[in-house]
Amino acid sequence: MKNIFDLSGKRVLITGSGRGIGFLLAKGLGDYGAEIIINDLNQEVVVQAVEQLKSHSIVATGIAFDVSDKKQVVDSLYQIESEIGAIDILINNAGIQRRHSLIEFPEKDWDDIIDINQKSVFLLSQEIAKYMIPRGKGKIINICSMQSELGRETITPYAASKGAVKMLTKGLCVELAKHNIQVNGIGPGYFDTEMTKALVNDEAFSSWLFTRTPAARWGKPEELVGAAIYLSSSASDFVNGHIIYVDGGILASI
View 1 (cartoon, helix red, strand yellow):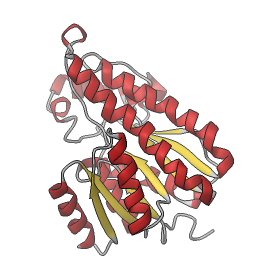
View 2: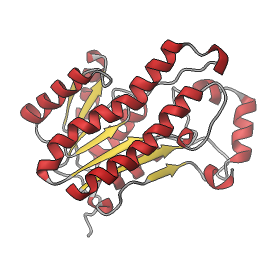
View 3: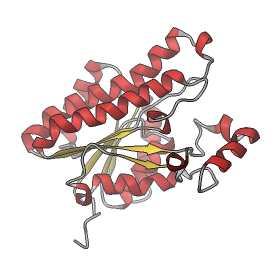
């Protein structure tokens, strides 16, 4: 039980992990012994992220592919499984944001958000399940959001996509739990990241956020790592279908 959070010998594929929160999760899991597989759309970004992890003595490889393209997903997972090794943990982290008022929201932006934030979770989970089921074990972690529970102006399609990821998590749990596969989610609250830079710089929004959040501050991206370690480790072997909200208490107060 002393080593319940140890990830030594575990191989983790994290989508959209070339930078941002995905990279921080990769570094955090790698520090706990996991072998990391970086994914991003851009090969150069993948190479740079892998080299950064290796500089911290983390075992890491990378593969560039489009998580919303079924053929690329199928081919890439086959390549990983056959050339690198079995994927023990999949973290569906890739996501994008677009901001427009509802009546002005471009259809193309809607399609892009749904493809990356929602469709990719289904495609990756569906394909990895084909490998995990015969092995009788595995973990899938989906990155959800406050908008899995709440709406906010200018990001209605994003909220729709993250609400869907919440229900995908529950549906996948129901179908896969009997195969000893745990499917859970992490719901970040309001974190100071590249994606939220416009809001961080908006004094009025930050003031509102500090008033409504019991912790009275923005979250730090590294504060998501603990939840990822827990859901990746044997500590969560009987935890399934849940979303852990790392939100400073905001959902408890709204």
